[in-house]
Length: 218
Image 1: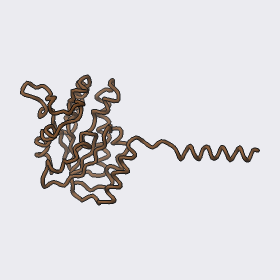
Image 2 (image 1 turned 45 degrees about the vertical axis):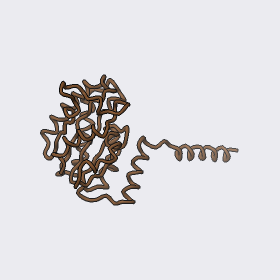
Image 3 (image 1 turned 180 degrees about the vertical axis):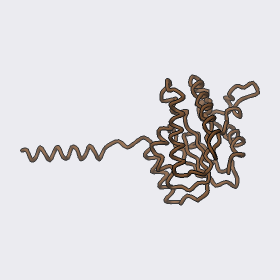
Image 4 (image 1 turned 90 degrees about the vertical axis):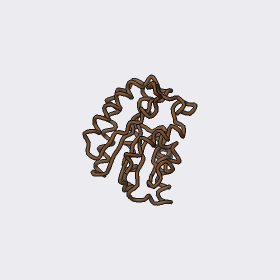
């Protein structure tokens, strides 16, 4: 009887471990790995890393003719996710430039999150990049002010300001501010640059981003 009980206990633990939940976005990372196996990533490309604003920019290459771009945005990701999957997001590539858009989902997950927490999350990821790529260009696109998240704008504005100040002191680093390009002549956020959810942006919104980004592109 004891042997049978022991066998059941072992079987239970074996099944429990085999069914252990995989980290959020695990499948997205596997999809990137599969894409890299099917089409080995080119060297000296511009690597985009971040959340859904990059994920949904499926035709990003058409906005930057002559540039080789690898898009590794995965929707809903936070800076904590970029840090968790940093090795998977960085090690397969030999880019000449990395551009990051991430941070607004950090606040969306926790409305009371302080700007300094998100800034520190970014600094952690930036450090991970520099450990692997000490000399390449690394840029951060400012957090956009989505109408659906207006309640979070104060923390977002403070975060943008602090990351801009940090990047200004770093070599081969730039803060790409797209916020002004998304405003009208009165300084109000242009809602027409957003799709119905008032979170993600339209092709015209991406063109506004592209105009700001082009001078920074290697």
